Amino acid sequence: MIFSRIVGTGGYVPGAPVSNNDLVARGIDTSDDWIVERTGIRARYIAEKDVRTSTLAAEAARRALDAAGIAATDIDLVVLASTTPDMVFPSTACLVQNELGIPPGATAFDVQAVCSGFVYALTVADKFIRSGSHKRALVIGAETLSRIVDWKDRSTCVLFGDGAGAVVLAADDKAGILSSALHADGSQHQILNTTGQIAGGEIVGSPFLRMDGQAVFKQAVKVLGDVGQEVLDLAGLSLDELDWLIPHQANIRIMQSVAKRLKIPAERMVVTVDMHGNTSAASVPLALDVAVRDGRIRPGQLVMLQGVGGGFTWGAVLARV
Ligand code: ACO
Image (tube, rainbow, N blue to C red; front, side, top):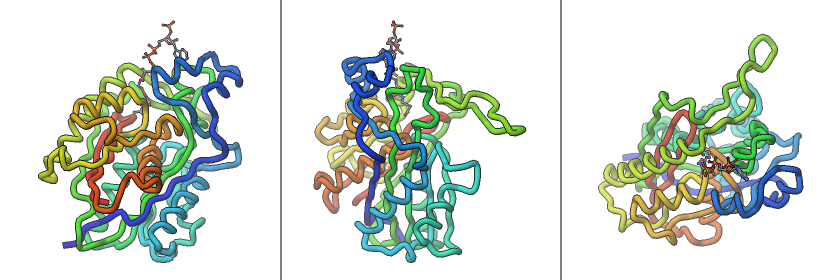
């Protein structure tokens, strides 16, 4: 049997951290106390105007390739999750392929599942590899969310940040990815969206992210609890065997509620929302990379990755790293 295994991780955030007090200094009517108490966020990174999502993605991918000891020329699949692509087309995955020198003829495409994007992309890449059609994939979550945030809307602009995370996924005869589950409920599309589109040379609809924060909060806690149990059941494993939970880093209160629902002690949850804010599709691979590099996640451990976001979409992947 062919399985897929994560053999390297990488992460990249642009420039210097922007603290909550920096936002206050920039004229946003908020406070460090409000943001920390409601969200757990202390800082985020904001890309300069000339930095694109593909730039962040390529840097995270380079670091993942280095960690894996695999050359870009050996990659035959690029799956990139983003809600803030460089352009309408071509896909950001193709731009990263070109930037890294991944050979022409590889497969490269974007996945759009908003903050669930990385778990969607990882699951898709896992299925490609298990089918035998591809051997080494780069799976990337990358965002410049700051570009679609309305900096006049304090209820959303303080939440988000820019960044990218990546993994190299390779074919292996031992199972790395043990189970995954992806779900969507399009009837909830209105609770979190950016409705703008380009038509007739103009942006039609809003170019900014809009959110019903309380509806998103309630949905996220419920679906992440359910999908966490679902991937454990699919793999025939119990919660006691789980070493690390890496939920989407949206808000510490959502994350703590999910851990409580799943009865996972707080010390087994990886938290980076405090330093990165919500980086949408980048949040899970960035958190994974931080915990791998600081030595918390060790080879052989069992890790659950969880995504949730606009669509409404959600999913989880259970992996032995
Ligand atoms: N600073 C200071 N005050 C603020 C701010 C701010 N940045 N934003 C809102 N407020 C005020 C509001 O104006 C309101 O004041 P009022 O009572 O005088 O009218 C008060 O705070 C409460 O506002 P609410 O919107 O009701 O605040 P709530 O307690 O719901 O917290 C929050 C808002 C943090 C967004 C919360 O709803 C939440 O965590 N939702 C989850 C959504 C989330 O994390 N989304 C991330 C993206 S989605 C995803 O990744 C899945």
